[in-house]
Length: 313
Ligand SMILES: NC(=O)c1ccc[n+]([C@@H]2O[C@H](COP(=O)([O-])OP(=O)(O)OC[C@H]3O[C@@H](n4cnc5c(N)ncnc54)[C@H](OP(=O)(O)O)[C@@H]3O)[C@@H](O)[C@H]2O)c1
Image (cartoon, rainbow, N blue to C red; front, side, top):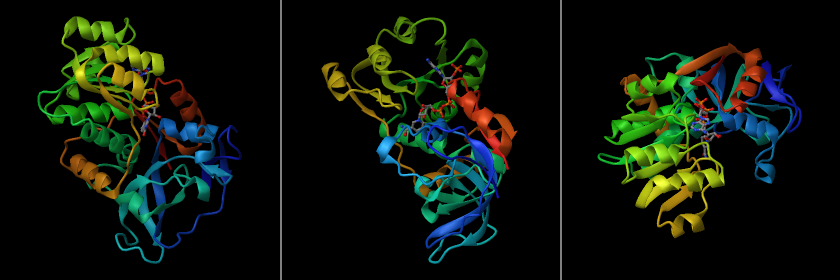
């Protein structure tokens, strides 16, 4: 089968011809129609997770995907051949990965895909959508809460903006001027241009009493501390990239943490339900063929992704 993989951590991703994987006990083999790109894909290829991840090479890249079940291993109860599914396929110890014509998933890592959207749309949802859902749950975002989302125009941010606004929160989203209207369409009450000066100053100028929740996808440790100036006493501050320091947060009388995603099939089912109900808009900014994955990954590294990138397989 065709797949995009690396031969070692740090090596350039390449289109390769690799053996088709076989499903083991509790596993499902899927013929993928589309794979969704996330920053974690190139972070994994770089070996950014160190000893925490054991990988077999060639390592097929890609976590998210959608397609049709073509075989099931022993003990699989939830799926049969022909089911349309979406979910997470990255198994580093088994050689990967959703950037391929076929991939194996654990039964609990996938769910039936939404009926009303394409595979490309479904493939754009799993990691970013589950992250956003867990974020709004864990920070108890709801009616009347003011939330600042930094990195709001990206994959996670566009879902988090919609889910937070859908719960009645007042969302302040970072966005360049060209994206401001789009973010308001997704439910943001206001936008802040992160290219026009310090975000914290802009937010505090408009809201001297601050925000209840900060969700930050982009800042380093110093930038995160700077942004916590916007959070009112007793509020919550979350970093998605490990920039939160518990001691510093306690000093500022804030609750906060470094977010770690907790995927589940139930969450995938909830997201599929949202898609079918028209409650979640998926912004696929770029759709490229599988062989375009190396260039798409390079673009993602710049941090300037425009909506979700999907590989058509
Ligand atoms: N901890 C976890 O479990 C977890 C889970 C999911 C994702 N993540 C991480 O969260 C990050 C975001 O993921 P993603 O999928 O949403 O990425 P993405 O789709 O690549 O989005 C990046 C977005 O960030 C914006 N951005 C870049 N610099 C910014 C700044 N200084 N201020 C405000 N916005 C800025 C960009 O907008 P402009 O181009 O307009 O600047 C772009 O829209 C990644 O590092 C990812 O690995 C962590």
